[in-house]
Image 1 (cartoon, helix red, strand yellow):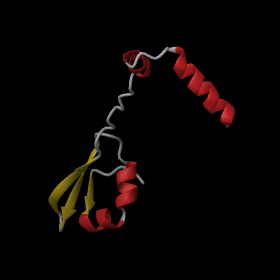
Image 2 (cartoon, rainbow, N blue to C red; image 1 turned 90 degrees about the vertical axis):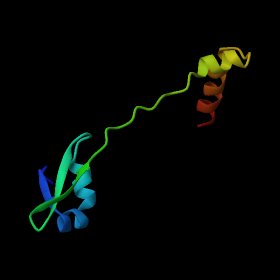
Image 3 (cartoon, helix red, strand yellow; image 1 turned 180 degrees about the vertical axis):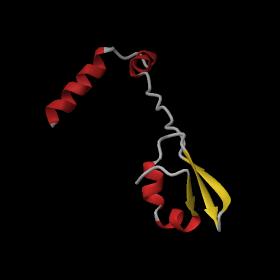
Length: 79
């Protein structure tokens, strides 16, 4: 689907998945009803996912830093 600056409320309702999927994060589209702007739909930017600091957590719990490597090795061996 091509990016449009405006879309009718009916089109938006019937093609929400395609419309929302075609927008890049931060892009907006205006929804109109009978030719008048009704509202805007903006795709939110992806939130960065903060990964836990596993090594710091191991140290905080007084475990050896090698424990993580051992766990990963056991996990990979079980596959």
